Image (cartoon, rainbow, N blue to C red; front, top):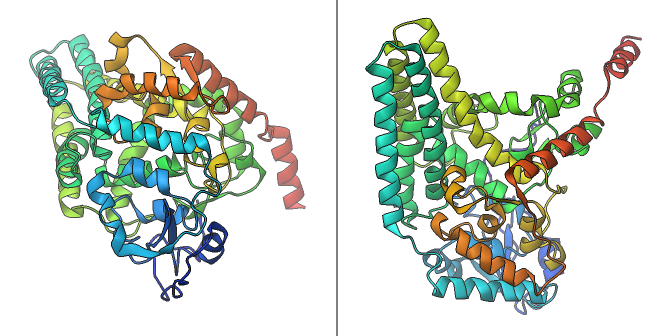
Length: 472
């Protein structure tokens, strides 16, 4: 990626915001005056809040706030923060909003009322027996993996052990996902401490890097220039927009590479998808290290939760994984173990991308009003995957992405109930489209979209002509 030097991943506030007008501001006023560098203003309900000096302290990362600067952040804020955080808002009050009902439709109001009812019904409360049972199952799973790896010289036992580790990583990632949304203890401190061990030490994926990326994904879902979960040039492009000219990634703070290699790879991306997903985990290792080291798109000045301990946990992961590999008797077993552990874990990357790659994308930030607000953004950019109840363990909640994106803090074991409530809700509002497909059908839809986008890539002959023209 080519860096844009005028941008900075770490915010430097150069001047205080202008004094708030006594009579308040309209939505148009807020959008006009808001500037994330000097006066980051967010609308929440009938108030305007000045978050300029808080953005670098925000546990969800500064970009989640900067993306919504000047816009209505009501639903994004409510769905991603528990009540205890909401009590902090008064100290950031800037002024009243003159036209709180302007641009807020009936469906959005009803959605907020439904959320209150769900909170009162206990949908946001954790059933800890669910996680106790899961913890016991995963402990047995890990022990069996170690037993097969270390107690036998049989090559096929080592293959089975590698596959079991890949499945273990997939399952642990689901728990890490729950913790990343503070969806288990509902305490950011407690869930973050647990995630340090489960994510960094057991899987090698940096908890803080993942949260930095995932929080942005939840706010600006499927935004071409904001959402890192669909920014995969030079390998994948989910929209022809990526191939029309260099797109500047707000997340990576760089222009995404658009060269001959990108056109060649995107041209066959529907064939590359599964092979790339089989090894996609390696990129997550790299991004985790770069983030903690403050290299590239990341900065050492960026506030990171326990950077030192996270680094130590990652070192611990590479230590135990390397030791396990070396304990195997020969190169064949080691390579088989390495490949199978990563390839089986690659199922997770299919599950992560499936619900968004196939869906609509947009440029910039939405949230102008209810026509493209929180409900529209999450439902248009996500799909649910239909599967039998007994397969829920395999998908770990990622098959209910629409429900999860609308209510990120709801514990996984309540998502099924909430899906039923959502389906009843949208019956009243036909303009809201709910997408749900079976797992095989969803894969087919996604591959079809990748194939359609691949047609926008230049052919070898076009690339050759371009190179001749440039040489001339």
